[in-house]
Length: 338
Image 1 (cartoon, rainbow, N blue to C red):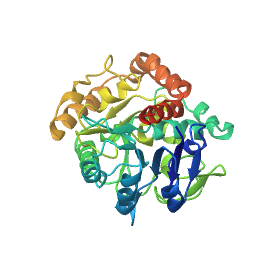
Image 2 (image 1 turned 30 degrees about the vertical axis):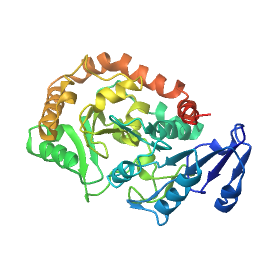
Image 3 (image 1 turned 180 degrees about the horizontal axis):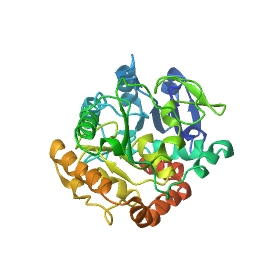
Image 4 (image 1 turned 135 degrees about the vertical axis):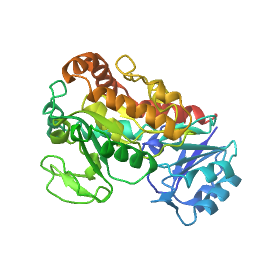
């Protein structure tokens, strides 16, 4: 059986076009249509420009549906604008490759981009040195960092609680439009989402593990980018904590911790009460999570740091030793029904 693949020249994050399974590879749609291949696969990369669906995406998808046996649609972010499209285009031909686990939907493959990209970036010796400058097992001035660059209900909840309870002096925090707290040696004073450089590498401010901040605070309060109960979404926020060997308390959607564990990672239920993960209502779940912040702020740091060492070392080793790209590639290959 002859096999052809078409790619629309937008980012897909992999080497799919170089696979030996293809007899014919093209970025020319008209050429692809004329191909006599017996099995045709279409690959559409990055269909969102920021939060907007790019012009012509649906027209291209409709064309490919008429001629393809299988279509893969890639995007490195998942926003609310994504989900109406997933529902609208429910054809068995389509597989979405996104950085989410969409509960109850087997047409979405979890793209582990935010895990593998940080490992790839910090594989550079100049950058990895930062990880050895961290002191994860020493007592810190602050108990938690809570750095909320964007405004969302989960972030508003965290900051409002930090600022009204008696632990605000124990938590290093910033929120929304407040002045940024820059990582060590980060001389380009850009906004979080603006392209910049660190040690000569192109990046965003959010890409950099903030050694000076993590060495000032023992644990992290994380409010992930979304908190929808229908899916799991992991970004660089979490990966940086794994790289830095940190305990974190998560303010996200229901079952976020359970989904994180399904990737092979451990959480901190032997140290704190993580039953908050099971609570459906956002405010109730976040209130239960914040009680764990208060609990840790009432405890001596060193015994806790000693307790979590085996967990965070396990997660750090798993992050580095797992072939994240290979896992995703295998899942994509299995979806190509030959």
